[in-house]
Length: 114
View: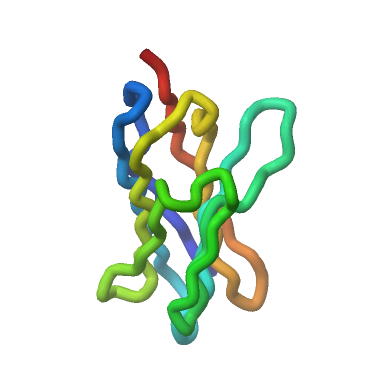
């Protein structure tokens, strides 16, 4: 079994920054692909950023140039650095690990508001 714990969400003013963390533990083999998704009420969960086992990253168009996904030296910890935050970035952010199946964290709320 795999467990994911996200942290770092909160309330921030437009233009501000936050860093989300996701720590994975349990039966993890190799360096897994990990990603961040977000979801607002009434909408589907959407991919924000992804980092593969080989280190390739990709981003949703809406966050390119503002968000950065990275791994810690402990390869099962990933971060999402979010800069120049906008009100439309408000959502619950979820971490996902792709093992033999997909594992999800419990989510962390990010609210961008003045």
